[in-house]
Length: 247
Image (cartoon, rainbow, N blue to C red):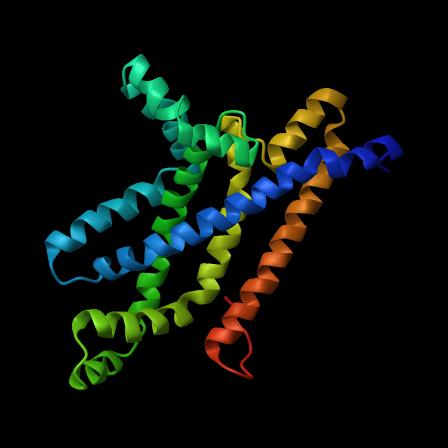
């Protein structure tokens, strides 16, 4: 059982971390999806000059672990610049100060680095998932749109993208939930999200078992909530009366 004092401290201790986890999840999920759609489209291009750069993007950011990407953007990228430029560009400027005031992150650039690493990793995975979904769309649907006067871009946006998203959405949902769990990696660059708060509380109380169980339950609840929301979106995409696809 969790003692009463620790139970009373949980809302104030983990509330801000949970809010930041949700914010990171939404921000990186939306950004990843926005990047993945055009990357998936270019992945299907007939021109090698268009296709190979996005193949490289997908292979690099999909296969380099998200943790390494986060640490690289947080700690390695700034060191490529001289000290004065580094300070002005990454730490001492109005944009970073404003982000710190809004988010409460002591070093807000590290929060941006974590978001960038998660976005690059997740968008690369989503691009391959969406490519598979787009390839499953019957060619006749695209040809029909072209025969009615739609250009390549219009056919891509009005036929291939919506149908591809519908076909791939179960796998997309799984990847977005995985991205939510990956937000715990932000703790490695001093971003005080949920897991970082748990680590801090463990250091203070030496009560690892119960605190980690609380964190596990909170992540389970977040994953369940995302599953419910994404299943509703899936059903909406498939039309009235449809059952969410299982994948």
